[in-house]
Length: 349
Image (cartoon, rainbow, N blue to C red; front, side):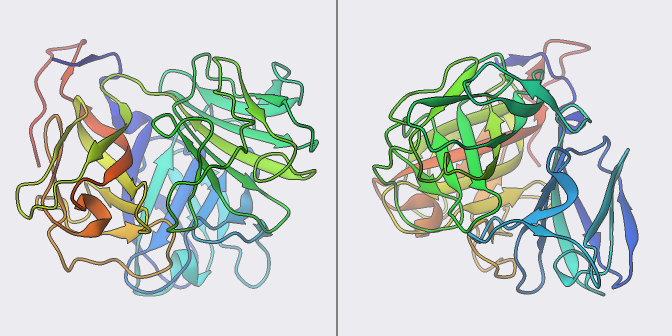
């Protein structure tokens, strides 16, 4: 059994659903003060909105767009604050259109705007939750090959998602199963590429290395979201699609998943996102895509979220092309068995 030190994962990551009112409102029930908030309108077309405590709650990036960071202001003021149990939003349609429904995905760093980190040749500002293996890293690139940036995790990151803030550029994604000589882009459906944005150098327990430009080290401001796997809380891996329907691949994570994002490596298809609140029971069939602005799709049975992993329930190319390798990120609703308390095994939804 996979024992875990984090007995309550929802104190580090939590999905919260809410309805828009077209005015302003405080969205509560996250369970902690979120440091990274990712919001997507479920019922109509709208871009994903991402804010964090290190850049500032009023500075928005869009997961499905290469556009530069936008600063909230009149007439919308989409995000007004990050609060002790959630966040406050204004009247922007992407986060608060009247009678529309929204999904918010919330991660905890260290509830600050970050502190200076000089582990790399580029000084960074880092807010890190080392217990949960998550850090937010802000830095200014120097367009110099071999430059390094401190990430604050204290262990080697397994996934990194990086965006140039003040210029148009794609979201670069590193995943340990692709390695440092490859990349994919969060805002695109394209397959894995031989992109040396990490200078073909694997990250260490202190820093990640950058090439002389490209996606992670232009002479501009950047933000990086870094993740290290924690037993019973997070898992970053890959699996092979079977092409079968109702009984596809089973992926063992060691916990009941709360959130899963999946992307085919060599097939041009989107970053499919599922969580334990949409619809809140199996079969989990409410799909959003990080690279797209479209409304939630529930046309197929996609997967089951189980006590110790997830099972693919479709032959759809998003999740199960025969012999296709797919990478994933997953965070826990609860560990299969925690090593604290009564160690009661988790159950499926």
